[in-house]
Length: 367
Ligand SMILES: NC(=O)c1ccc[n+]([C@@H]2O[C@H](COP(=O)([O-])OP(=O)(O)OC[C@H]3O[C@@H](n4cnc5c(N)ncnc54)[C@H](O)[C@@H]3O)[C@@H](O)[C@H]2O)c1
Image (cartoon, rainbow, N blue to C red):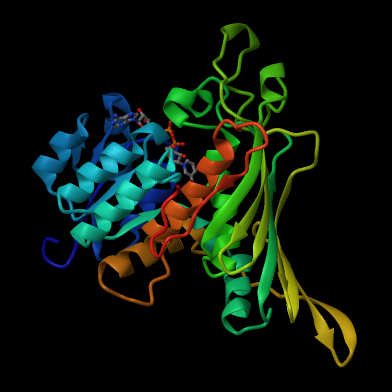
C-alpha cells in the first residue's frame, strides 16, 4: 500500500477487466489501478488509455517485479489462472482471480493452500451472490427462515448462449471446459452460498456436447464470432448435470447449459423444513412457508442495488484485504470446493462409476 491506497495491477485487458475490474477498483477511494498487462500490447495500451492507468506491460512476471502491486487481478483465459495467481501471491499481493479458480481440483487446492500459507486474501469473480435477490435470500438464511435446508436445485440454462464460438472459450486447451466450468461455478456458488457451504462427499454427473458441434446454440454473443466455414474449434461441453451429496446429509441438483432446446432459465431453489424459496437471476425471489395453518407464497419486494453485483464483490474484497472480518467474499476455500465438484462432474466417467469425495477433516482431499 502506498500512502493510504492499495496499488492494483490487472493481468488480462479483455472484457471483464474493462467492464468490471478496472471501474470496480477505480470507484473506491482507497484503491489506485496502477498497471495493466496483456500479451496483446495494443489492447493493453488502449485499455490503459481509456481508463487512465499509467503503466502497461506485456509480461506479467515483469509487471509483478517492477510494480510490486498490493492487489492483483487475474482476468485471462482460464488455463492461465493458476500460474498467474500463484506468482502474484508469491510476489506478496492479495489476488482476485477470475472464475473458475482453476481447471481442476488439485490446482485449486494448491492455490488455496498457498494463499493460506502466505496469509494473503484470494477470492474469485463469482459475483452473482451479490445480486439483490441473492442478498435477500441470504438474509432469510441468516435469520433461520428456512429451518434446516436439506435440499437445493440450481440451474442456469441458456438456449443460445455459447460465448465466443471459436475463441478461447470453446478451446479446451485454453478454457479447460465449456458450460460446466464457465457458468457451472457461478451456478454452484449461488446454491452453496445459501446452503452455508456444506462439504461435498459424492458427485454423480454427466456432461454433453450435443448441440454446439451441430452448429446450434449460437446467438447472443456467440453468433457474431462463429463462422460455420471458418473451422471454428469447439471441443468442450455445452451441457452438464449432476447430483451432489454433502457431509451434513443435504443434497443438490445442478444443471447448466450454454445451449439447449429449452427456454433460458436461471433459478436456485432452496428446500427447508420451515420454508422454501425460488431465486431468479436479478429480479425475483419468492418464499414459501406455512402461516396460521395456511400455505403461503411471499413475493419479496426488491430494491435494486444500483452499485451492481460485481462492484459489490470488489468492495467486499478490498474490505477483506483491509482486515474487515464482516466482508463476505467468495473465499479461496469456497472456490476450491466448487472446482472440486465441477472437476468430479467433468472427468471421463468410468463404467457405472460415481465419483466419491472422502471427507477427511478440513480441508478435505479427493481420494
Ligand atoms: N465473473 C464473471 O462473471 C466473468 C464474466 C466474463 C468472463 N469471466 C472470466 O474472466 C476471464 C477473462 O475473460 P474475458 O471475457 O475478459 O476474456 P477476453 O478474451 O476478453 O480477455 C482475456 C485477455 O487475456 C489476455 N491474455 C491471454 N494470455 C495472456 C497472458 N499470458 N498474459 C497476459 N494477458 C493474456 C488476452 O490477450 C485477452 O486480452 C476468464 O477466466 C472468464 O471466465 C468472468
